[in-house]
Image (cartoon, rainbow, N blue to C red; front, side, top):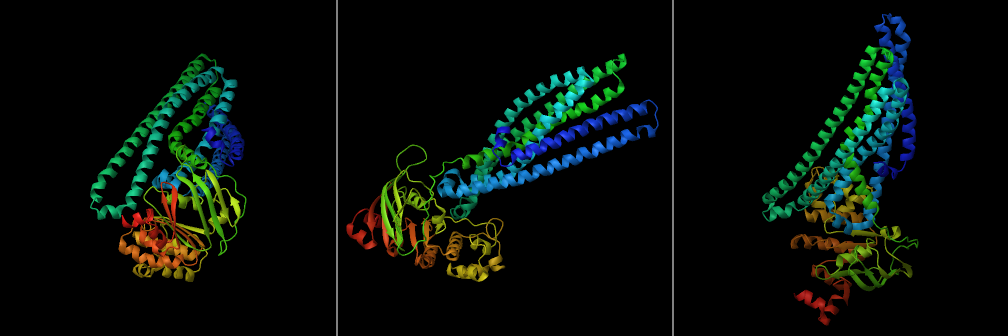
Length: 566
């Protein structure tokens, strides 16, 4: 656990604060036990209540101090966990944006959604509990046993000998629980991914009459998650039982030896009571760690999964600024190739293209020809393995540059609809937009009829937990965002591939208006769009094999001609 915690910002400061407070707290625990035993002994010896006044006052003061410090420690841990988990979440989101849609598709949208939403909460729980409990274990138990050693060496030795046995047994059970927890987390992410994909494809399943049949698959995945959860709980319950059993046996052994020596007059009642009161306190930190260990396993795994995302290879540092795109701007790719993450053949090979000013560029080719990869390269989501990129004469190593990203809008096949109002969805990337600007963007995107249908208009909640949108309506929301942002560069990756012909035709006119006066890269297999393009790039097996207008390429009767007539 310790190694995982070191990487979180502020952990060293938190550990120092917790250590200082814990030393005060364990001192209060010892004073509390000593004063309580003194009060009991005096009452046992027939003293009146006035003789135990000072002992009672010190006991109450120590008791209040102990639990006041415990509250302060809890608040410090909660504050650290809130900040650290939020920072981790923002870093992961920022990294995911840099990695782009290709990484999201590879990892699974459901997996990432689960990690960000559920994983952040579990990570917060882990960061709140583990540092606090580990400090208690590292300070409270050693200080108490050292104090007891000066009172009674036999009792201290019994506690010291039994403590490692409990730790070893807990480690063995902990390893088993961790294995079970890892399996549970993986199955949970599969379940979430499956559920998310099922929701996104529900309309298609209903249209094909397969929605009821799909229930069995959901039941199967859910049953796997139930079995994994029950397996983890079995080990957790066994661990708790074993911990309590060994603790009670150890305390009982101490009590037996104390009783025998009390009868023989070897030890006095006061020290014996102090030892019996402190023995449970000695084992309390390890019991808390054992009880909370299973509750924090998912958080530990979520933290590792987030760190794996953050450890994804960074692009080369790019310092050259990029000027705003205008009529005279030019982007030039020369012999650019892109490799997959693992060793293998190039997925883009020797790409050469030169685009100037504001044009509509169509990118076509069969499935797997490299259309989406080229869009990802232009969006800065992929780094070239070799070749050069120039923007207005300035050579750069890749396009993952803030100046570039600020100028482009990426519209994927299935735009994400946030669980917010229609107004918030449209203005998500421009939250300070006025109501008039949002309404104008909605009208331009063709959302007027949808707004009229909604009881609260633009304030109606959509997305998860709200009004479900069709594929065409979701694309119109994405177009409204683009109209509102009004950036000069548009990247579209198969934006209408999942829509029927009628819906696509309705959207086409809206999209063509949006394309006006912008640099547009449209990757699609719907070739009727190509008549509207100023230039067409034809791809095959990761290479550009033809470039020209619709008419020029038809006259060549090459690959594009065959695509049109196939």
